[in-house]
Image 1 (cartoon, rainbow, N blue to C red):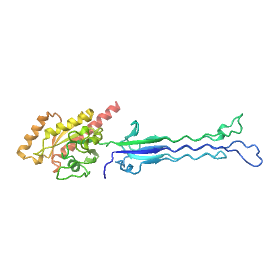
Image 2: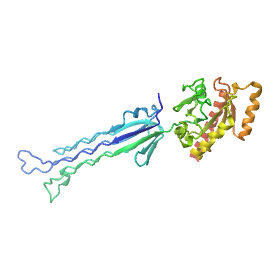
Image 3: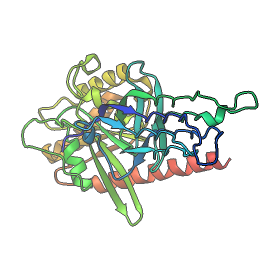
Image 4: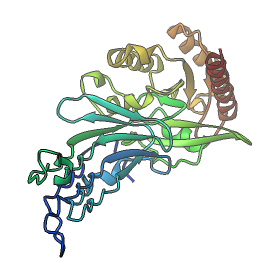
Length: 343
């Protein structure tokens, strides 16, 4: 299934029901007073985060969401029926903007969290409400107020603990296939992921994290070239980036890293400062006697001081050590966050 990360929808809350003008008419009651009832409230529209949904694909065709109008008031002081709110379910991690003004309305970051996006109309008032000692037969009423109407732009950022970064064909999709149950397309020819993929990496019982694989970046991505820059926003909530580098003999790993870092800084300096580990992939394609020296030369040329892992995602060599180290790092971050909240 294609990953849809943005969608535009229209939401309309229900109008409030109108108040009623009515007078009591009964036998032997010649001067019955006003008995017009109020209208009912219109339904509001809410967005609700649902962890069972992971894309915005359902909004490609179904783009209008209308709550029901409140019922009109009636005689005998009968109040119109108020309508139930309309709840539209969206993936966890959805960000909601006003389409025209780009105003941020809110974010849905927890399963079950709700966000009011269109307020239902308030009920109108019947003529009973206007009765007074000086106006015993009021003939005025108030109509219900209109419900809100809005054009919304929904944007989904993947909620992943760890993100994969690299040039096209660096082996990101192969790695996520090797360590999780995700099955993005891979091929034995130069090929790039077209849509983000999420995979749950299970390290041991009750120890797992979510990994995000996004399309690879190319030079000029910050100016709109290629696909990857469209999806870098999905990495903004990750706590750790794995920078995969193609170590095959025909590749230029140092230049690849420099290119990615330049594009990352141009897109988001904050993201460029995120904790990042270097993963030298496809080391199985290097002759055994040259492997260690070539990896050392790349690390020295980059003046890299962070963690470095040598792996072959295709053969799953070195991947266990990588995911265990990543799990330890994520758990340390969780512990620090808990301590900060407790303090």
